[in-house]
Length: 156
Image (cartoon, rainbow, N blue to C red; front, side, top):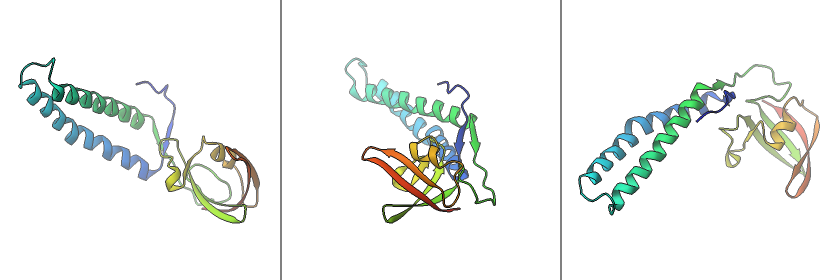
């Protein structure tokens, strides 16, 4: 898998999580599935062996994910935190005010984005608009329900 040497921005936590996943896949899951493939192969006729087909498919998926993680980690750049909380950048936690309520988001690289955890990609519509903004700045973001106006309340 070629990622065109695009930088993959990750927090320290995100990098550790990907390394942990790679280690788990390489050292635990892949050997287990390989054992299943071998065991199923020893059962006889491979043409009608559903367990063999399923194990081969799972092995192919695991190998693909291991390759993908290897490329990600090769191109990973850890987001460095600074003591400056004056502008929004990768790694910033930003509190926004919109429609009478406050929301707090952390701006992360696309591989760590998780809307349920309020982690937004710097390449998302909101993330793109937030980068470089300061406390007090007003921004507008196009959303499926229409434009939403936000005010930057704080940056951490």
